[in-house]
Amino acid sequence: MNRMKTLTALVLSAALCLAGCTAGAPSSSAVPSAPASSAAPSSASGEPVTLTVFAAASLTETLTRIAEDYTAAHPQVTFSFNFDSSGTLQTQIEEGADCDLFLSAAQKQMDALESQGLMDAATRRDLLENKVVLAVPEGNPAGITEFADIGTDRCTLVALGNDDVPVGSYSREILQNLGIWDGLEQAGKITYGSNVKEVTTQVAEAAADCGIVYATDAFSAGLEVVAQAQPDWCSPVVYPGAVTASSAHADEALAFLDSLGEAQAAQVFRSVGFTVVGEGA
Image (tube, rainbow, N blue to C red; front, side, top):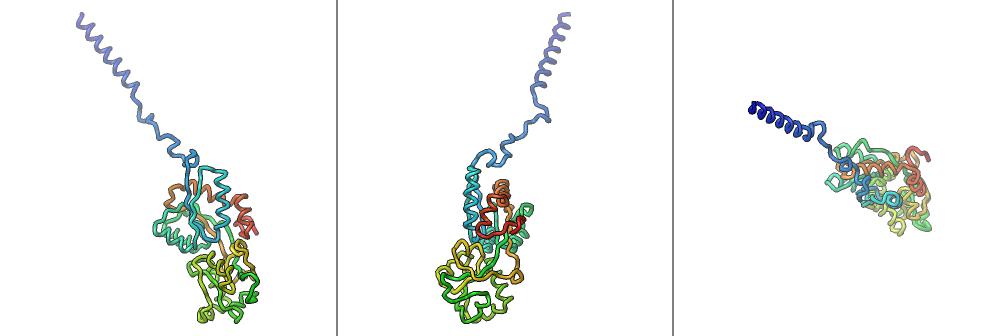
């Protein structure tokens, strides 16, 4: 009888122990997931983020100002800018340069990067439109008043962007449509700049009789504009933007890209002559 009581007590003790252990162990459905904060964007948690932005040289003044306003509203986000010709920036991205966001002065460079899978196509959008103009040094010493004058004796030297610079491509289109491109090349009347800022500098310093640049760059450099290219002389000047496929801060880059279409940024762009896509002239 005592043996039976002892055996019963042992069985009850073992059962209680097993029940206690089972209650303390988590089930598979109760395994905790990673904390929500680990998946949140750095800027959302207040951690500092530096966005590396590659942008066409013609965006230098406006984008710098817009970024300052953005950082004032989002202190955790700062910027590292690389301003140059869109063709140069394209090459740098293709060669693996760190970049979160690319803003091009033409579709050609963005198309090339997207075709290689280097851009996040879902984030791409057209941001701005610009105009191509003919600018002259102060006082207009050569007396140039229209694009056709580039092909006459009035012009001894015209400043243009290189072929890999969007404004250079637009300039070639214009001069070919006017039938004066071949004559300029043969006469050696062209001086080239590696980006649009170099072209404006050559004009401002009167190193050339005139130069073909964007309306916004002529405005920023204080150049005298004597003519604007007709719409059918060259392709539309449209600036696309997109987050790179390799961005380490894709969420923050997209948030900044989105902000470029908002009222505050749009006002800065319009102030120098850009047209904001979707808002009209």
